[in-house]
Length: 99
Image (cartoon, rainbow, N blue to C red):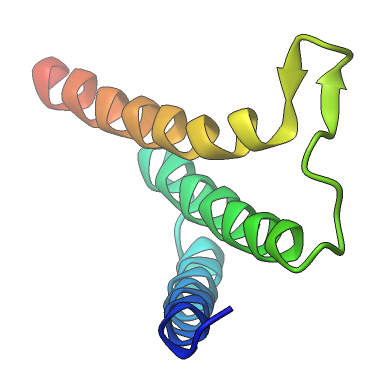
């Protein structure tokens, strides 16, 4: 692993940690459904960053399945945050249409 890759990993971990920390602080202040979905998306995104880092260093096996031979953990961790962001945006869209 080169220096550039290591710096990239460290920056991604630091930025993800900052975003997750701020998201958790916001979680304590808000009870809005749309914001809660966005916050959960940020937290799961940081989980994906941690999982991919641990996989890269060989701490966690790369082929961990949630449903054997069908659904891998990395597929869920890559797509779940986007689904939560989309759900949060959808809640905001429906809220603005009802007002």
